[in-house]
Image (cartoon, rainbow, N blue to C red):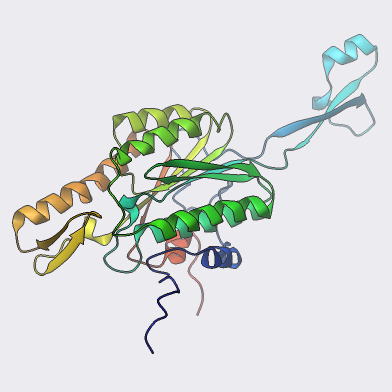
Length: 316
């Protein structure tokens, strides 16, 4: 039976139904400070992922059994009797998920388009962060700009973010017109994000990082001074597994061209736009206090996430 042309192919376009359905699969990993030994987030160079801090609740008279370290000596001196400062664990740590759905993400050679894998990563992260009681918001980047969803501790916030991701994913097409300076949108959006994630946020960027340059590194370095950053680097196997034979027809939305993989120049050009970018970004870990997680669009998303976060293998 031929496929229904009205139903999007889940490998090519992410749908809200698919992203919402990942809520039940968003477990076995987290973004909190304690990480398994095998997690890509353990052993950060300068700091660990920040946990929930302490939030002031009240000042009251000292009672037998109170921790003497909680005594507020200034208030005690003014009142003439011991008073303690009562704190409680903050209920959440806000997170901002930046999801790339530019035309550069509309590419895949094995399993998914990079845009679909990015959408799935964002959905898994959003549901997991919300499930831990934290606020979650996001920004969805397209060729023409970025739309933002404020961080809230509510399922509606996650649903709005994923609805926006699905909408931008469904808009991607091989016939889409070329947008000048689309690569520059990445840095523009990161600058906007820097104005949102003020302190002790988690910033998760899910992208192929098309257009990333030295300015990108400077922006991220500034954000990392007071926040935690996780970069999910979505790539296609063709970036580092370019075939030596065969042909492929590719297009930019206006023109199409047939690539002959037997030609050395073709393979070199593919490596320059794919493999070289991957190597450069991974090298940022030497200078940027962030976790960089390479995730392939050529493999199922969930097993990769669990592996990167150090989850033990499932028993059969």
